[in-house]
Length: 292
Image 1 (cartoon, one colour):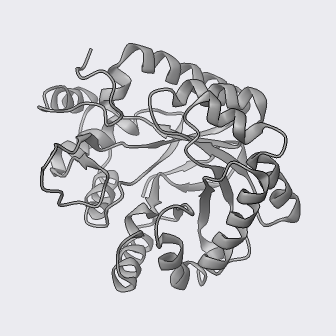
Image 2 (image 1 turned 45 degrees about the horizontal axis):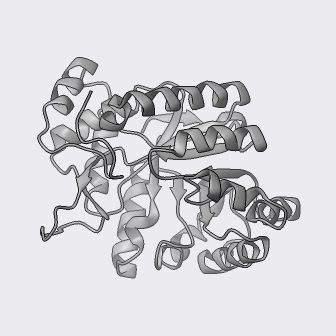
């Protein structure tokens, strides 16, 4: 399993971040099997959130027993100090742990959301207090949508977040405005030694209206191994990227792990050829609909 260092945290973990959104609506048996598979394949970076259904509860039985062997991250979507503080303690209780390695302000994808989090009495104050108490080791920020790179760049100007987590895939990076904003974020993150981590690496498109949905993801994911391989080749070609979160479905997880274990077998040109020719490939966030 390929490993990279998480910015200035100086902690080396698997580039595969176990996206625990996949555990939100599964049985305990299914969750246990997926987590065990992850550990057997060298995945030691687990990323969850208070809003991921029963994910934190499903993680608890195994995670609590291997806490010292993994990097554990969760998120709060609350915007007030009080709401965030309550959610942080609830997350620890649900997972059966006394601390997390990373606590992230979740889904901060607009300047308005950033203002709410960073204003007096905002959620950031709760994270800072939790860090002082020793139950949170580092503080990060996440976001969805096409504005995320710009918002996170501004976030790094307001507070030295240790990590940022935002969308990145071949299609989104092909959009000139997104590419420019993402590159600017990467440059600033590099200066601050803040770790950049990605989501939506294998997202293909929004689900078509009325289409059958064989996966638990809120968007249509790629599921053909060759295309997943191309997505992984693209995403891991960013040397400043410390890792990416897997799609939110336990049935896709083994395919993604398999692809990472073979990273480098596919060349950059082949990956580009595959991804540039996929029919129906677009953004899942409702913006431009063609590759530049």
